[in-house]
Figure 1: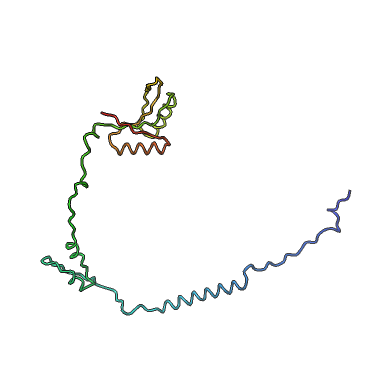
Figure 2: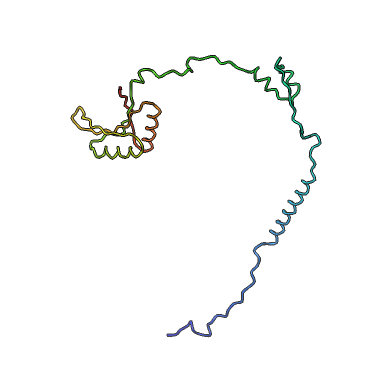
Length: 192
């Protein structure tokens, strides 16, 4: 066997490091200097701009005295554009709206007050599944109960009911909670 790696005739000579060229070209330096010079020249020109002669700052705010004896007409108020005339225009532009019976709120009908509302969240054949759903709804903050119902066929069902709700807004809030929990619900109207 011959060891080629230790052969002295094949050794590589260390290379001298070449100086690295700068990565920024002369064209980029020229363009950057040209843009910087243009910016400085533009700022210099802006400092020499004088404000328009016809604009005068108001030192004292103009006030208008309003007499209550007789409101001025619109033609008189348009004569001086600097004055505020909304004090005069507002009473002139007042609109009286007639009372419409359809827009007046009424007390709820007596038939609605005779009923409570329940939400049926589920109906199961096994009591354990109904209890699982009831526990899930209790953790959501809803008042859930299970009831055992015998069908006309003789089969037994376990219903999960939420409620009762007196107001429609509380019923809607409970329906939103059930919808967020991926549980369909059915509204049941129960006489008090």
